[in-house]
Image (cartoon, rainbow over all chains, first blue to last red; front, side):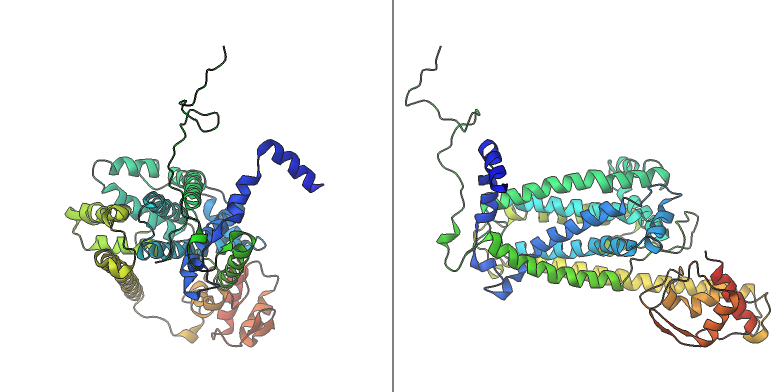
Length: 223
Length: 270
């Protein structure tokens, strides 16, 4: 039955080449920790992606309880943390996952750098990776404000003061992010939108390009 | 009229207008590399998933044992005594900026970090010889090592300086409090005027029950307790054994009157 459904779809959509390309490609020995334990350094990229998936899933559940405005933001986070079943676990996953993503990303970047894997023909995938790094730092910065306690508020205030220092563009960037002259009601809605819609959209797009380029170019050979 | 086709016609990809290129940058198949290759699915992915499960287990232990921090009150923009601290991965930038006097902040905030970011982005074009071993690329390797060491150092300095700042702030706050009340009443006096149940909670109870009374891994939440004042006083005096282990007796040692006020304060959190 399933075979028939698949055959029907495959006849029309030519599905096989798509998944066969992902499933059947060879993984070489030098990146396989089962053969050389030191090859675990090649796992950091995959673990970064794994943690990003944790962030997306836990973030989706946090968004079911979070209210992005200055009156309710803190109370909704507190309610989630203290009252909702398993709320503190989901929030804990998102909170600690944010740090783990940065750690894994940093390790992955160092692995790529020190193995010289960015050299021709893989220059563009390095550039995409650096952009991904910037997007993830942006997610960290915008997400930090959302619990709306003093730690969040004053860190964001300082961050925006630093952004203002940028010549020419600075005041515009600050005004765009803060939505006004102070960190307040408009800031939290903007940060929420950037954190939940804008940056994740860019993140998924860049991740797609990152993975397609890996399949197109293959991974770098042994040192 | 049908299309006239001959051998010299340009070939296209599918039904597009993209011309078929003879030479493409296909990667070498891994069967040409020495060693044991294996298919990505299911062989390799299964092993990768096992590694991910170990990672996930360790991650969940961290999550469950260390609840995500949340301060007791919402943000107060008028709180001038709060010392700001960015998340840890921005600390090196924050610390770097401190070394620049206010007139030259643009160097510390934009120009120098921006220069390093640009070097980082353009690394494949700056380091273009085919050698890939770190030892064969001394400039790239040593530059990266110096930058990483610098980031570690700046982060460490930021944490140390922040701690010192917070301690200095607390010391000066305590001094102010002493000046305001030059003759602190002895502890056993038990008058309502000098006893602050919130301060007593922060000193004696908050380490286990949390500064916001929401509980920690060590002790349960004290919010919305279904107990009377006398029962709470009894627990403070004699301790109890509950679902999360044993609360030892005498964690707060004050007079009966102070215990009663502390119990009333705790029960006021519904």
